[in-house]
Image 1: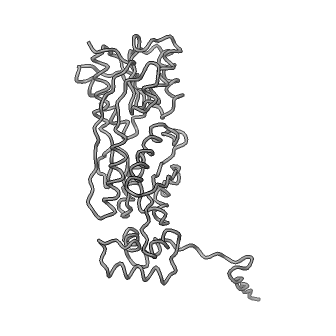
Image 2: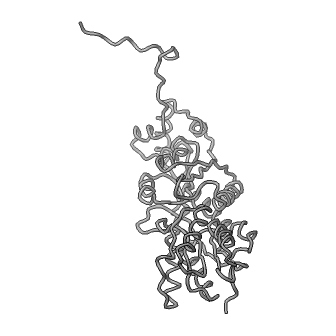
Image 3: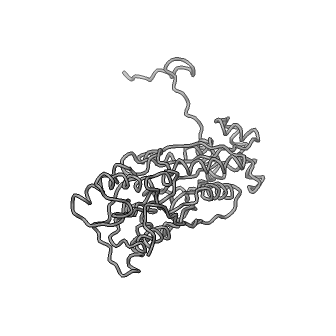
Length: 355
């Protein structure tokens, strides 16, 4: 005997299957256009042809597309929220609580408020990287500012091919299809190392993870400055580590326990440098008399450290403005190019006066 499936219960009754929520990607597929084109049509973007806008808006109305921000778009209201996405790696990378990123997010927020926009902060774990653009895809935000490239260069290029509007805080890389704003990390690495060399250091340890693009450039500057002086960097002085204070303390312990001679530390972040100061003090090493220390970022903690930390300053106010301005320019249909911001050395008490 042939069995037939019982009819599905009417919507609203127990056991009824809820219809899936219509996404902007569905409209894009039906209209045979990109998601960004649908976004612009729903926001009545002036650079889109009237015929295209009308066709997409009519399709959206016929499908009862009314998902939160999307409904505002259909009513002619412009969404004014920008997503700031933070790729979170629980073991190896910078955490959301890192003072540098908190300061950068603050500058971005200030820049958005000044321009009449609001900010939505999104944290995404490595395994769910595709959710970086979820706020845009679901029309909670008009675009995304991505904080950090980590090791996602290829996947970020794929987002660019999709036409998703975003700008990245990070290093300018080869074969890059997306727009970045970042500091001159190579120059910063050279400035820090040249200062230490001028102050008499010859065995400079490097603290940081050179597999990350920005840190790799700071490491390259560390090498270049020494080679310009005719020095060959000792590979034992390169200490790969995540952006965690405890990691820096452990490496100071290991350098000393292993008998590796060093008279300076160039740390790829102020968090690592300040931790190194503490660890050196616990071993009876005086800073800067026995070991000099230079950090990177110039977060407020640097000036408050004991001794006050010499560091490479990144201009976070300029970074916040540039990230916002470039994203808004891209949304207006303008061509945008990567921007490298200058870095400067701020000399304090953790290094000696150059001879």
